[in-house]
Image (cartoon, rainbow, N blue to C red; front, side, top):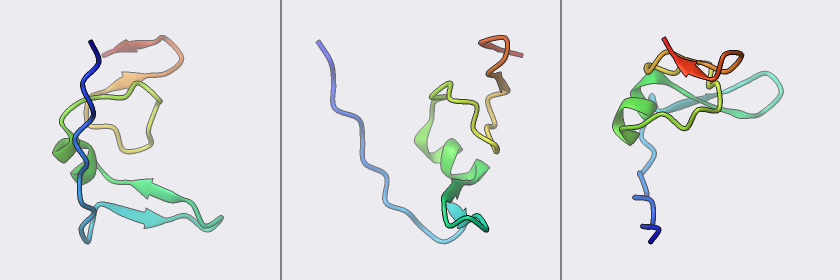
Length: 56
């Protein structure tokens, strides 16, 4: 059974806009979310390496 993901309200400091106009989530946001999505996020505090597919 799949459980719906908790929606996290965005606050100041949760993301910034890249020069291309994309939202880039910060470490602050990832810690609030509470888990690693294993997408290789730029500011991942969980030390996931997308190349190896493992947490370091």
